[in-house]
Image (tube, rainbow, N blue to C red; front, side, top):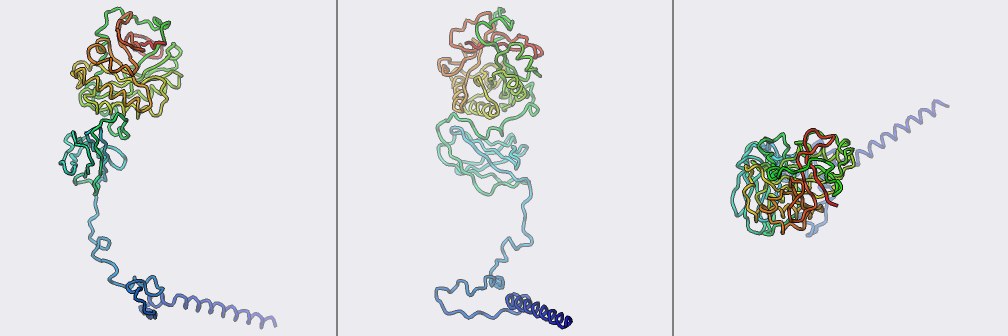
Length: 416
């Protein structure tokens, strides 16, 4: 009895498996026919004029049997297709007034140097990167929209499309968002040639300057200004020595090349001073020869200061580069316009702006009456300043000594 029941169960299982197989075969019968080379019979479709040229039946895979469906002459099916090889580059552009700057960058966002790239400014002409620094300048364009395309160059994959930029005749004092591409570090330049910051106040002094750090503490706050020339600084010791504020050099424009260069100790000094609880401001040594370059300088400072909370203004250091600087021979009108462009860009970025200069520089090299909206930082190395204009910071010596700083350091008073 038990063996009969077992045989019946096995037979029922076999029939169920056979039934499932038959059902699967019927469901996929058209696919099986195509696989073994026998086309499925054409479905009968009622005549419909509106359906002519459209889908016929429910078989959505029918186009696979149409040899004319694919264009075998297209690049997709060419076995000998020419695949581009080389370094892929892109174009970034910005404009200041009627001047255009075209930057060639790689996939990592770095300027591509060492190649003489060329850019076709439609309707204007072709401009080349003669100094091979990855930047192409086009000056004095008329107001309007321009289309720019990078020319083909061996070893590089350039964008196939044109890029449009709008040129306005009005100069806008706003920070450039892509200024970081122009900033170099000191290990990329010859510092001895480029960093020629020259405190003219030391040559204008009368020998009566007071180098004592406590000399004017009853007048205002005692502070220092520092740069990479001061080397490593122990900021906790500086704080314990009674320093109330610090103005840190962010960088400078190269006196020879005109490059924007970051002070090698800027980040270290900012972090150290802030950590020690010392209020900070910033200064930049300018060698701008026009308002466009002044906006670039201010843009660099704004970009570098984004990580820090400033308590004091951002100053433009307007002074000589020892007679060899590219901006040393500017006239009063030009230098004043450059100084205003820097300060306006700073204030439009949400910071306070100021101007640093020696007494004679204030009197003879810039028009102080046009700069009264900004903080004034006077450098005069005398026992008491006799500059008749307004100022709220006074650098009274470059020969001070403070615990935590090796060698001499500039001492300043911030008036209450």
